[in-house]
Image (cartoon, rainbow, N blue to C red):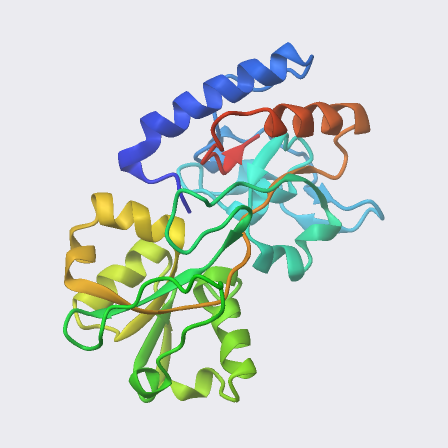
Length: 266
C-alpha cells in the first residue's frame, strides 16, 4: 500500500511518534512495525475466530521473509494497522475493530476521509483529466472500451471494486475491457501500463502521489479519469483489543497532527 521502500524512513518516524503517543496513553505499542511474516508472534494451532473456527494458520509456518497482509490483519495481537474496505466488506470486518480513518486532503482526488482512484493510461492515449470538484466519477467510457485492464488485487476497493461499481452506475461493467489481469500492486499496475503490458489501471490517489515522487514509469502515463470518492483505508485493531485500549488508540489518532501512513503494526 503506502509503505514503499523509498518512504520507509518516513513511515518509521511516523510510527515512532504514534507509538510514543500511545505509550503516553498507557498503551504499550511495539518498538518497530511488522514488515515480514517472521516478525509476527507465533500462534500455536493457528488463528481462530470468536466461535473457535480456524481462520488463518500459525504465522510461524509461513515464509518468514514474505508478508501475508490477511494474516497480519487477523492476528490476535494486532494493535494498529491499515487495511482496505475491500477486504473489510469481504469478511475482515467481523474479526477487527475500526480505530479511525485517515485524511486524504493532501492528495488530488482526496477530501477528508474520502479518496478516489486515478485512471491512468499511457501518455498520448487520452486527454489528462483533473479530479472532479464534486467527487463524482469521471469515466472516459469510449477510451476504456476494448482496453486491457490491470488491477492490484481482486479484493482491492481502489484497484477494481470501486471502478466496477462506478461502471455499473453508468450502465456498464468490467466487461467493457477486452481483458483483465492482476499486477500484485498499484505500483506494478503503473509499470504494466507504461510498458504496454496493459492499457489502463485504477490507482488510489495516495499511491498515485507516491508514484509521481518515486516511480519512473509514472512519467509515461497520464490520468484520464477518476472513480467516485469513497471512504479511504481504515485503521484497525484486533477484535480482542480491550475497549479501554481502543478508546486510547482513537483518542491518540484523533489528536495526531499528521495522519500516519503506517499499515503494518503488530
